[in-house]
Image (cartoon, rainbow, N blue to C red; front, side, top):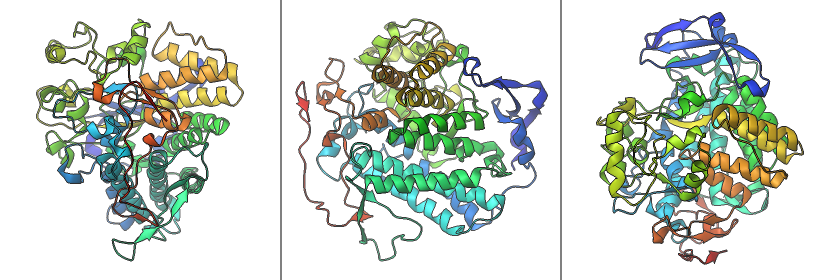
Amino acid sequence: MAMNTLKSIIAAAAVTLTAGSAMADGMRDVIRLNYNDGTSDYILASDISRISFTKAVDAESQAYQATSVMFDSMKRVFQVGSAHSDFGYPALMLGMDLQTPYMMAQNTGYNWFLTWAKFENCGLYSTSPNVMMWRYCYTYVAEANKVIAALPTPTGDEERLLAAQGYAFRSFAYWNLAQTFAHNVHFAPNAQCVPIISESNNPTTGADATYPASTTGEVYDFIMADIDRAIMLLSDNSLNPAYIDVAHAKRYIDLSVAYGLRARYNLSMHNYAEAAADARSAIEASASTPLLYEMAGFPGFNNVKLGNWMWGITVDENDETARTGIVNWASHISSLVTNGYTYQGGTYRACTDEIWNYLESQPEDVRTNWFANGTYHSDLLTNSQNKVLAHYKQWSLKHPNLKFDAYKSSIYGTVQAGDIPLMRIEEMYLIEAEGMVMSGRVAEGTNALNNFVRTYRNPAFTCAATTAADIQSEIIRQRAVEFWGEGLTFFDMMRLQLDLDRCSGYYNVEFEFRIRGGSDFFRLKYPQMPPYVDGYDYEQEYALPTIGGEWND
């Protein structure tokens, strides 16, 4: 169980946490695990008896091996055309954020995500957004199918734990595919979506096998059946992912993460009451608590062991993507990394005026510190970090992000490791608030929103909106700020069919678009690669959106 990764365990009676005093959660006994690298993590006290520090899941079993490979695939370098944007799911997160009104990066000749920012996915099927999303997610499906096939009738808590990983992971892969290759299921349940490939119909007839495209409704039925099965297998289970690997438990899916995934899926389907209920279940099943106001302003967001993370991709120094030097998440997102594309290539990620103007109007919002101000200096940074920040004065984008720290805060390091967030507990509070508001519990949801933001991000915040639609818009803005760079905002745009307006003068002219919500310009095109779609004309080309002030429908 990698016992030597733990320095000490603090007794449950010595530590109690609350998930937010305004949320009426009450205090919960927890165990604090102190690791040799100086970080801590928390687990529910009731779970300590579930963790074996001397016996792990059978590492020789086919199911364990398949599960390990499945989660490793999220950080796999696929060599898609030898592109330096090819470093697994985190690359998709960055690409999708560049298709929103909130993130920008310059075209300096070193921007590997130009096709995303310029919506070139709308033209040829062979562009990197189409290829990357398809190849990555269907690889995840294939790996999940191997886990599920290895455990067709899981018995015992160990088999149930591993099988749950396969079902939950497959649901996540299909949710990504459904969100990007089709219109939202609420608006178009019968629209053509993607092929469903399960453990029972894996490709067996060669690389040229074709599959019928299911409707969005059918894909979501499949997604929900998978996540429901995962929740069933994880419920009343005496084991949790720490039993698989206590040092990297959060790279796996526990009951709280499974509830969190189902909350996301219900939100996508506009099942608001169900989304709120699942978010509450996730909060109650998790030992995670929101990042405190006093700590939230410092660079970070690169360590899965932090107490507000529920699920993440763990990237160690020996991982392939870290060893590439510059083909990784840190190289493309952290402004505080000097040996990467942000610093060396000038393709740092900055927030847009829409984000900055809002934060500047909220001086007590701690998230203002996630982006550089006009002086390119921050009192929360070290002298060395401020020296790096001053480097960006030469470029035209005004507000480089300071949210994502360098690996071990080593700004001159040559190892670009560091974990990537897939789910934080803060998301569950905002899903719960939105679900309440949009299912008729307007006052309750507004209070939940106010309490969360005031407690953890902006003590002066008050939601001024009064109608459900306007309150939802405020929640979407809070999500855009809170999860900047974490790959969630584009999904909000797709599920609500929000307009994109990037013509306010802060983008390079080639990135200035106005695209109506629900437009086909947002959808990815099937790439000419397995699994092939029955009857699809791969040679057809589509028009690109018009650059500039004209609205593209």
